Length: 256
Length: 351
Image (cartoon, rainbow over all chains, first blue to last red; front, side, top):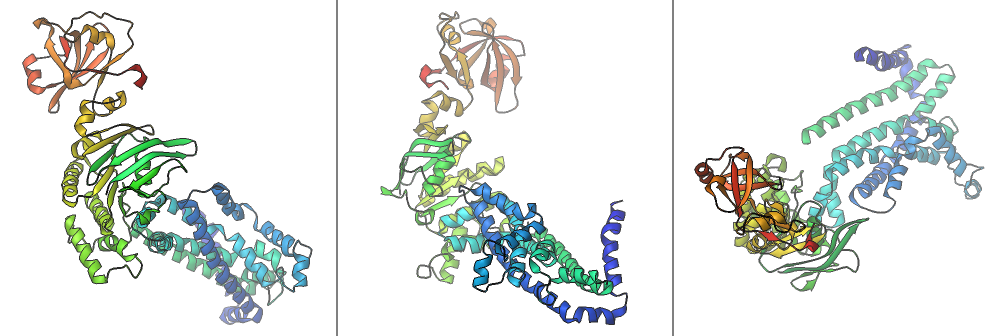
């Protein structure tokens, strides 16, 4: 039963994506993917991921480390804030950025004066993506680090290690698989994010279109095969992510 | 190095973990911090180690007369062994023991060769040489514990602090290891404080026992002192089985006769099960009349549950197996009890 469900709702659509992508032959597929606007969207997506994911690794690890290894006032507030991007619809996240940085927004006039473009430009896309994917790393690490407790860190400290040494030599090796897992999920979401990015991007072809936005445009122009060709690249990324994820899970099981 | 703590207070939110606690461990002694869970003993140990700090302005911690209250853990030169050992899972036994030496500043760090030499010497000391290449997950509980001990000793601490050192081990290993720890302590002569909730353990190996309850120290003394002369009802109960009898039973019992003389007296009498003598009722003589309700004879001692005829209070009695055979006791037999040694406390101390 579960298998039929899976086949209908997950595997079948995936097959359709690839079938559609190659429905006009390999040459058409290559042309659709190599078209300058498509290449620009791929480049933009990779750029966004290259900035958003490392930023969220740093934020996520720092937040998880603070929440699980220390007692401080405002801790539960911080925990709640981490979940905020999950709680809010991505479209609204995007709108908030428009309200803050857009031409009519709070900082809009100041930004225009200094000739800094955030909304309808690459910085806005990166900001929105970073916001939406923020919880993945922290969420993955917090339960893991909570379960591990603080004894090993305290051990290191009584043995004379500094805070940095404790982090690099004790904490990080203990969370490495969980961290990698979080990075993979964060990466997948950063590539596929549509809602928030759609609001802040302005859909300027060849400039502010990420892969998901490009797919939508092609689709709206009835270039179904072209849309599916680019979509199949995203799907391929998703499959690669899943394989990587299971590999990490398998490793994780092996080490504990 | 001696360890002193004066007037330590510690609150976690509204919960008081330590309420003005003093402690004094003389140079080279093995001191047990004994108490039930939640009595504050682990918090006290962590404060001595510098892993927690006493509430501001409340008290001081002194090592060899020197105030270390504001020193961080890494600067106190303490060896701390955690209850669950807290070994670094991703490092081999060798790397675990070497950790404290490798994190030193370059100017103070021994060379690789001398680190290796010291690690092997320590592993030999804890009888684990040959396991240097193993990972913690490949070791038994007792072995892990000794690795943790070797790791703590690698930085040449001035004092050794052990949090429930045998808590996570099974009963047999536990006994072996605590005797080993005692011999080991005599060998290295390091002032050692260990936390335990097991009175047998504390009484067996410690030079001095500090009994804690509800954020306070109840009594300090040698194992024999605290066992023979418990200062409070809590200590009496905590250090072994005890019967708490209403006073009339004693006033009427003991060597003075059968009749309760002051039925209104509220005081309580404490008597250990092995301090009660049992004779058959038919044999005559004095003593409290009681009926045998249950006989538990599995073990080195036979335990009887008897019910006093007059007060219907239950009393636990321990007699030797041979006595049990001699008396030829059965359930529902009538016996007389004589209390060899009893203890009573002022009402002020009542718990």
